[in-house]
Amino acid sequence: MEPLILDRLLQIADLFQRDMARAFEGTGLTTARVHLLWVLTHNGPSRQQSLAVACGVSPRNITGLVDGLEASGHVRRTPHPTDRRAVLVELTETATAMMTRMQREHVELNDTLTAAIAPADRAPVERGLNALIAKLSALVDEASAAPASPERRS
Image (cartoon, rainbow, N blue to C red):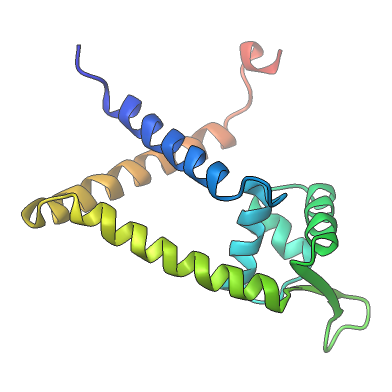
């Protein structure tokens, strides 16, 4: 029996997770910490509340992530330039260099994976992936908006 498209997508997700775990083995960087660094790379210095929303975690969880990344020298907390009560989280120079390298490797991996697809098939593959992402996003949003069924509450 042929694997379902969902099975193949899950296999791809697993391969990415395993590759990421291998790449960060021994660094103390977890998937959640790398995600936070990625958000800071793209959004710049941010308040913890904004980071929690961007990362989809609770304020308490983001505090723990920032504390860990601060202790490892990846981020620092600095005063907000216009709001004396607020603190910004920003990348350190070391983390900026690491994230620049990661972005370069990200593009290289994208190019390598794209090269595995015949040029004539690339646009249809991209359209198919975009359709899958849109449908799954809609399903997740619907499920999040719906009240939990009795079976899901237990």
